[in-house]
Every structure is written in C-alpha cells, then in structure tokens.
Image (tube, rainbow, N blue to C red; front, side, top):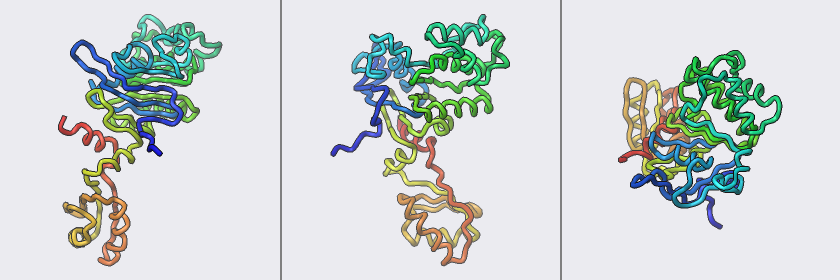
Length: 312
C-alpha cells in the first residue's frame, strides 16, 4: 500500500497537479503538486517564493503554464460558477477609498449574489461595525484588511483564500482575525492562508505547506516536518541546580551530541528527543539535582524554515 503524501489530503477541495508558471524567463512556480481540504492550511514561504502566484492560479486570476488546478472539481478559469464557492483576500489593498466599508462590502455582496443580511453579518464578523459608515480612504492598514476580509465573507462560500491577510493589523485585530479564520476552518470550510511571518502561520494552521523558490519544500504539521529533518539534531534548553554535573553525566550517557553550559542553563543537542526526555528524570535523581526546565528550542516553524532555506 502506498503511503499518502503529506502534500495531499484525503478529501481535497483544491487540487494542484504538476503545476508550473513562468513569466518569460522567470519561473515563479515549478512542478508543484499539492491539495487543500477542509480546515486551515498555512502556505509558508519567503517573499518571492511563489505563494501569491499559486493563489492567483487557484482563484483563476492566472492560468498555469503547465499542469492543472481545480476547485470543487472544476477549472476556475473556465467555470465561472466556481466563484460562488470561492473568495479571496488579495495582498494588495484592492479597495475603493471613496466608498464606506459598508458600501464596499455591499458591492461585493451584489457581485456575489449574496442573500439579505450578508453585509451586516460579514461586517460584524470582523468587528468593523463602529467604522462601517466611514470612507475607507481614512482607514488604517489593519482596518482596510478587515474590510477586505468582510468583502470576502459575504458569499459564505466553502473556500476562502487569504494572501497575507494580517498585514498591518495590530495585535488585537490580529488575534481576532486568527480566531475567525480558525473558526471557519473548524466549521468545515477550506481556508488557505499565505504568509511569510512564521509566528502567524504557527498560530493559524495545523497543516503547513512550505514553498521555497517556487517548489514545495515540505508539507505536514510542524512536528512531522521537524521529525523528517533527520540530519539536524534537536536543540533543548535545560535548567538545573548543578548544571556542570548534569552536563558531564549527559555526555557520558551518550544520549546527547553536545552540551553548552551558561550559568544554570544547559543547551544540548540530541538526535533522540524522546530518549533524552526519558533518561533525564532518573539521571537528575541519581545526581541529587533538581531539573526546573526542559524546553525544545526548535519545535517551531522558525527552525523548520531556517532548515528549508539554508544554503539558498
């Protein structure tokens, strides 16, 4: 039986098969195969990695140079009915400054053929009610982002594509939008969120696709991607009452590859994180020393991302 690829989900809403996109001599996306399904998927990559190009192909704004993209089983470039199921929040401002937020969201509702009440519901979802009758030209960047999200939510469709949706938002706005996107994913919608900000993707998504230089560099949850990096040791911070005795004992045990001591803090590198976690308590007890901290430093997207882009 073939092991399923982490880049592919069991019940995909969006399918990207062997897709490439080039502009003249520049290759923006290269032979990319992946899929997206219900829930929140983070699309991670540095600026210029090809994320926006991929999303524009998903929503039908661009055609692939090679390969196929389907949404709900249909090609968005040739099946306009797909747009009733699909919404996008682009990275660009894409707002009419002379309109109020209510007018802007209302215009999106008319274009989407959304039902009554959709405008007020979308505005309330992004907490923009107090400013809904002000001109967008006077909005901050974060408020414009929320107006764009509201416009995308009016059709209440099953697929939501978000390109850097948290740009310019303050911490309170960011937390509210993250909670909103996660709730939509939990309701069974397909939410694709592109970002170059590692902490944002980690808070937003359980599943991550990392794109570097237009190619799929890794896929899966953060822990799975980190476990696949077998040639990179784990780094763990420990704090102990007698750090030097513990450091010597760890090196003798063979469960760690290196230990650095600074004050009461030890930084260890190990290829076997589980083994280290098992051996530490009895080792500390045998030494009569108290262990007050065990903190893996690199079980995060930041370490995964550093690994993926190293040497590029």
